[in-house]
Amino acid sequence: MATTALIVAAGRGTRAAAAGAAPKQYALLGGMSILRRTVLAFAGHPGIDHVAVVIHREDRSLYDEAMAGLTAKLLAPVTGGATRQDSVRLGLEGLAASNPGTVLIHDAARPFVSHDVISGVIEALARAPGAIAALPVVDTLKQEAPGLLIAGNVSRDRLWRAQTPQGFKFSAIRDAHDRAHRDGAGGMTDDASVAEWAGIAVALAPGSEENIKLTTAEDLALAERHLSAVAALETRTGTGFDVHRFTDGDHVWLGGVKIPHTQRLDGHSDADVALHALTDALLGTIGDGDIGQHFPPSDPKWKGAASILFLEDAARRVTARGGRIVNVDVTILAEAPKVGPHRAAMQAVIGQALGLTVDRIGIKATTTEGLGFTGRREGIAAMASATVTLPIA
Ligand code: MG
Image: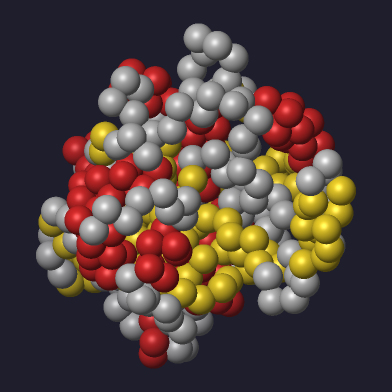
């Protein structure tokens, strides 16, 4: 069953935005809107199949601008309501047609959500029908008396601070929100509260101090400084090369697309020579061996495997290192079949796997003028390069 991230961006964000300015989720942070950063954090996670955003009815053009060029995994936006709780309920209603198995609800104003936090919530859903990112309270808690004096201490024992994402079985949280709405149970500030109200068990998963909610103008300024600190990034490139021979068959897999042909490519997996070269290019950026090491042809598990799995695994390895894929570029060397008619489909498949927009995915093809093994139509070769940024360790 699919997992959809529902990003709540319908608020007016008046505490952070200057009068007359766009709501804070559309403010630029390090040159990119907060909402786009948040959407990319989820779209780039291999455990997330789709991303949908709940927006304010007046924000459609701001939304379109913020999402320009993003198509991989992105569903149409949903119009929210007057409160956060209403907006989530309407957002869930908007997902009903696609009926995901799991939904991760997340505040647009938390753009620094990490791969690990998202993974942690997804994993915790194995323990309960609901799971949230949260952090134990570490500060000493004081209760206030009149005159801003301290009345006493509150034990922080077993107290946690709730963050987002908050993940749920889709049908369970949708029912809970609908019931709360019908019963007039409003004013709940997170979805775990709605779930608890409905009697749904919710598990705690590790949050992160970096996963802050940008609420005030001071938060935005702090985040801007934080970004320039993490701007200590280095750029790395990797290359890959692969060859597969032709054998009897009626189609080839190239770039994740099945193309009718007079022969097929021989190999243990689906023999997608383009994705193999690309997988090796990604692994090259982090010095993490090659495709044959991670998916040995000797292992029957990978017999006939879809090579997109190899590519997704390589992307996961890059993101696990804090890396971000900047662009990839593939060249296919073959007399036939023609690649041009399938280029857009290949870009879509690769974009989905890597969380990249199509303008970051080069797909090129050339013949070798009848020369060599590709020229003699004995097989197809592919080469690829990948560029990633990684925090300097
Ligand atoms: Mg290969």
